[in-house]
Image (cartoon, rainbow, N blue to C red; front, side):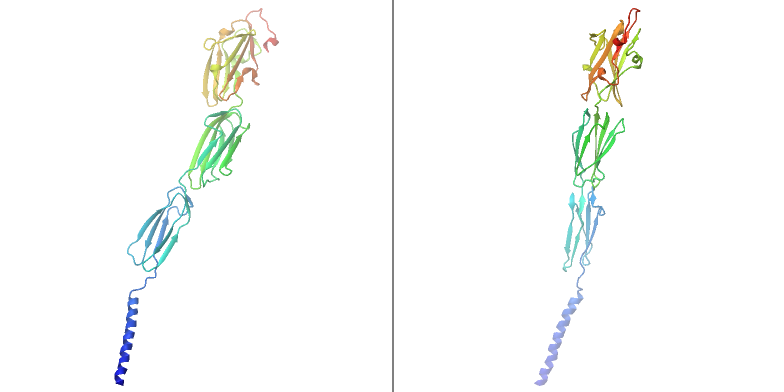
Length: 331
């Protein structure tokens, strides 16, 4: 009996060892997966914080226990945006990816202008406010410029916050001006705007034609058509022009087409009006006085009698030997 009991022990022991051995053989024959999935990300304009192009991310996922790859695309929303990936395989291995925060700006800056309109004519001061609306305005590349056409005036203004205030005083001479607005945001979106305006404080300049200028304050025995030129940056209302024509201090009414005509020309420097008085008006001996009064688009009232650079248009016609005039009559 004792011998039989001794034989059983090794048998039971062997069975235990065999069971333990076979269990671990099973585990190690299926190699344990400890490698997490791989995440590869490609982002357009990845080196730029700001972009005006559609920014996309291509995400490629691979795993050592998976055939092929999984590819996904992410489109960044306008404004600040980023994305986060978290993936886990069947063995519990996990990998994550978090992108940088990028800014997508597909909209150009917008301007709001107060105090000036296209084609405006000023005979006083200009008070302008320009506001730019854009969350990511590039202040180094956004500015306003005012340039004169005929003169040398040129001024630049830069934004204080999102606003520029321009006060145009009398340092701006009479001229045609262009206000240029340049707006750029950090993504490269641009907005350009131009507004033309005119500063006209001085109104018209009158000039007697060279053929007649030497007659002023003097006398002649013969006169042909008499020319007076009016120059102005703006249009003049010649239909309502007031023409004072006096002969020996008596005022005569003149009619356009019958006694005089007006020739109008427009050039780069403005408008020129030539008033041509027909020689039939001066066929009698006596003292003649001519004055013009007009109003321009800027609201200036222009008058030859008040032009500081011109003498009063007065002269005498002396055809007969009996006619005589003194200087007091002609000045």
